[in-house]
Image 1 (cartoon, rainbow, N blue to C red):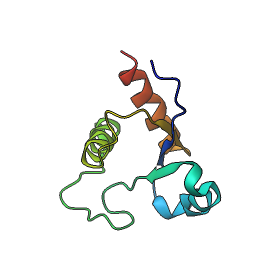
Image 2 (cartoon, helix red, strand yellow):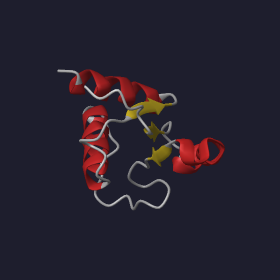
Image 3 (cartoon, rainbow, N blue to C red):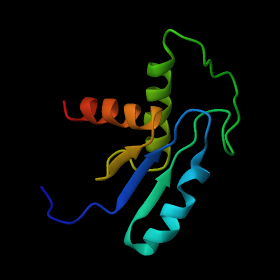
Image 4 (cartoon, helix red, strand yellow):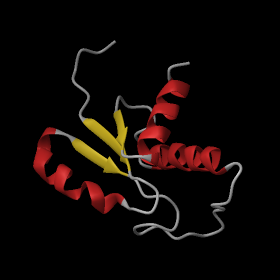
Length: 101
């Protein structure tokens, strides 16, 4: 295991918000960390497309979407820290638990 500090911070917003929520934090961190703030479908610059926000499988669909974004951004295999607010925190904890196994 590498002793290098994790410099990528992946942040998930609460439902109903977008990645702009984390712009002040990204600015404050400057070049000390790369902030990857994600948006859910239909929020921020992301189109809603065919994403279904109805229950009962919403949580799993959002987890799948987050995993896909991490892969698209090239973050999925690199060391990174996860964080979030409200639903974003719950998704971060669930994803971290899955990655630990």
